[in-house]
Length: 162
Image (tube, rainbow, N blue to C red):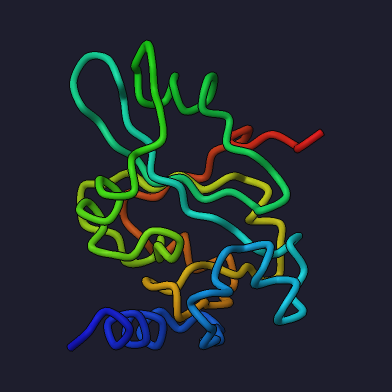
Protein backbone atom coordinates (compact mmCIF):
# COMPACT_ATOMS: atom_id res chain seq x y z
CA UNK A 1 0.00 0.00 0.00
CA UNK A 2 1.24 3.44 -0.88
CA UNK A 3 0.94 6.69 1.01
CA UNK A 4 -2.04 7.88 -1.06
CA UNK A 5 -3.89 4.64 -0.29
CA UNK A 6 -3.10 5.05 3.41
CA UNK A 7 -4.49 8.59 3.32
CA UNK A 8 -7.67 7.49 1.55
CA UNK A 9 -8.17 4.64 4.06
CA UNK A 10 -7.56 6.91 7.05
CA UNK A 11 -10.04 9.49 5.76
CA UNK A 12 -12.68 6.84 5.13
CA UNK A 13 -12.17 5.41 8.62
CA UNK A 14 -12.41 8.87 10.24
CA UNK A 15 -16.02 9.31 9.16
CA UNK A 16 -15.31 12.99 8.46
CA UNK A 17 -16.52 14.43 5.17
CA UNK A 18 -13.63 14.85 2.76
CA UNK A 19 -12.73 15.29 -0.89
CA UNK A 20 -9.53 14.16 -2.60
CA UNK A 21 -8.24 16.46 -5.34
CA UNK A 22 -5.56 15.30 -7.77
CA UNK A 23 -3.28 18.14 -8.87
CA UNK A 24 -0.36 18.76 -11.17
CA UNK A 25 2.77 18.62 -8.97
CA UNK A 26 4.06 21.75 -10.73
CA UNK A 27 0.95 23.57 -9.43
CA UNK A 28 1.06 22.28 -5.84
CA UNK A 29 2.41 25.42 -4.14
CA UNK A 30 -0.55 26.89 -2.28
CA UNK A 31 -0.91 30.23 -4.09
CA UNK A 32 -0.45 28.64 -7.51
CA UNK A 33 -2.82 25.77 -6.65
CA UNK A 34 -5.55 28.14 -5.43
CA UNK A 35 -5.21 30.39 -8.47
CA UNK A 36 -5.15 27.55 -11.01
CA UNK A 37 -7.87 25.36 -9.49
CA UNK A 38 -10.12 28.18 -8.24
CA UNK A 39 -9.90 27.64 -4.47
CA UNK A 40 -9.71 30.42 -1.90
CA UNK A 41 -6.46 30.84 0.05
CA UNK A 42 -8.74 31.57 3.04
CA UNK A 43 -9.46 27.82 3.34
CA UNK A 44 -6.03 26.56 2.31
CA UNK A 45 -3.54 25.46 4.94
CA UNK A 46 0.15 24.70 4.97
CA UNK A 47 1.86 22.11 7.16
CA UNK A 48 5.22 23.41 8.32
CA UNK A 49 7.80 21.31 10.16
CA UNK A 50 9.76 23.27 12.77
CA UNK A 51 12.71 22.31 14.94
CA UNK A 52 14.60 23.53 17.95
CA UNK A 53 18.03 24.97 17.23
CA UNK A 54 19.24 24.94 20.82
CA UNK A 55 19.10 22.29 23.50
CA UNK A 56 17.56 18.90 22.85
CA UNK A 57 16.57 18.42 19.19
CA UNK A 58 12.77 18.60 18.98
CA UNK A 59 10.41 18.79 16.03
CA UNK A 60 6.74 19.67 15.59
CA UNK A 61 4.31 19.96 12.68
CA UNK A 62 2.31 23.17 12.53
CA UNK A 63 -0.78 23.75 10.39
CA UNK A 64 -1.60 27.36 9.55
CA UNK A 65 -3.78 29.04 6.95
CA UNK A 66 -2.11 30.23 3.76
CA UNK A 67 -3.31 33.75 4.57
CA UNK A 68 -1.28 33.80 7.81
CA UNK A 69 2.30 33.24 8.89
CA UNK A 70 3.57 30.88 11.56
CA UNK A 71 4.59 32.66 14.78
CA UNK A 72 7.96 30.93 14.99
CA UNK A 73 9.72 33.42 17.25
CA UNK A 74 7.09 33.53 19.99
CA UNK A 75 4.45 30.79 20.06
CA UNK A 76 6.47 27.98 18.46
CA UNK A 77 9.62 28.81 20.43
CA UNK A 78 7.68 28.71 23.71
CA UNK A 79 5.87 25.48 22.84
CA UNK A 80 9.14 23.77 21.89
CA UNK A 81 10.74 25.18 25.07
CA UNK A 82 13.78 26.26 23.08
CA UNK A 83 15.72 29.49 22.97
CA UNK A 84 15.90 29.35 19.19
CA UNK A 85 13.78 27.57 16.60
CA UNK A 86 13.74 27.39 12.83
CA UNK A 87 12.04 25.67 9.94
CA UNK A 88 13.23 22.14 9.27
CA UNK A 89 15.11 21.74 6.00
CA UNK A 90 13.34 20.06 3.11
CA UNK A 91 15.48 16.97 3.67
CA UNK A 92 14.69 16.87 7.40
CA UNK A 93 10.96 17.32 6.82
CA UNK A 94 10.85 14.59 4.18
CA UNK A 95 12.88 12.16 6.31
CA UNK A 96 10.79 12.88 9.41
CA UNK A 97 7.37 12.64 7.74
CA UNK A 98 8.06 10.24 4.88
CA UNK A 99 6.23 12.72 2.64
CA UNK A 100 7.20 15.14 -0.08
CA UNK A 101 7.90 18.65 1.11
CA UNK A 102 5.17 20.95 -0.13
CA UNK A 103 2.59 18.19 0.26
CA UNK A 104 2.83 17.06 3.88
CA UNK A 105 -0.44 15.54 5.07
CA UNK A 106 -0.87 16.43 8.75
CA UNK A 107 -3.40 13.66 9.34
CA UNK A 108 -0.89 10.89 8.70
CA UNK A 109 2.24 12.00 10.53
CA UNK A 110 4.48 9.52 12.34
CA UNK A 111 3.72 8.88 16.00
CA UNK A 112 5.50 11.06 18.49
CA UNK A 113 5.58 14.14 16.27
CA UNK A 114 3.43 16.84 17.91
CA UNK A 115 0.80 18.33 15.61
CA UNK A 116 -0.23 21.91 16.37
CA UNK A 117 -3.23 23.43 14.60
CA UNK A 118 -3.80 27.18 14.53
CA UNK A 119 -7.12 27.71 16.33
CA UNK A 120 -8.63 29.80 13.53
CA UNK A 121 -8.66 26.68 11.28
CA UNK A 122 -11.25 25.13 13.59
CA UNK A 123 -13.69 27.95 12.72
CA UNK A 124 -13.82 26.86 9.07
CA UNK A 125 -16.37 24.53 7.49
CA UNK A 126 -13.59 22.90 5.47
CA UNK A 127 -9.84 23.23 4.95
CA UNK A 128 -7.52 22.21 2.11
CA UNK A 129 -4.45 20.22 3.19
CA UNK A 130 -1.52 18.63 1.42
CA UNK A 131 -2.19 15.05 0.44
CA UNK A 132 1.19 13.49 1.23
CA UNK A 133 2.71 14.35 -2.13
CA UNK A 134 2.68 17.28 -4.52
CA UNK A 135 0.13 15.48 -6.71
CA UNK A 136 -2.73 15.37 -4.20
CA UNK A 137 -4.70 17.78 -2.00
CA UNK A 138 -7.42 16.90 0.47
CA UNK A 139 -10.39 18.95 1.62
CA UNK A 140 -11.61 17.96 5.08
CA UNK A 141 -13.77 19.23 7.89
CA UNK A 142 -11.45 20.59 10.61
CA UNK A 143 -13.25 18.31 13.07
CA UNK A 144 -10.94 15.56 11.78
CA UNK A 145 -8.14 17.00 13.94
CA UNK A 146 -10.08 16.00 17.06
CA UNK A 147 -9.70 12.35 16.02
CA UNK A 148 -5.89 12.43 16.08
CA UNK A 149 -3.75 11.62 19.10
CA UNK A 150 -1.01 14.13 19.80
CA UNK A 151 -2.91 17.03 18.22
CA UNK A 152 -3.26 20.35 19.97
CA UNK A 153 -5.34 23.34 18.88
CA UNK A 154 -3.16 26.38 19.54
CA UNK A 155 -4.53 29.93 19.72
CA UNK A 156 -2.03 32.38 18.24
CA UNK A 157 0.03 29.77 16.40
CA UNK A 158 -0.20 32.01 13.33
CA UNK A 159 -0.20 35.74 12.81
CA UNK A 160 -2.04 37.80 10.22
CA UNK A 161 0.09 38.82 7.27
CA UNK A 162 0.24 42.58 7.16
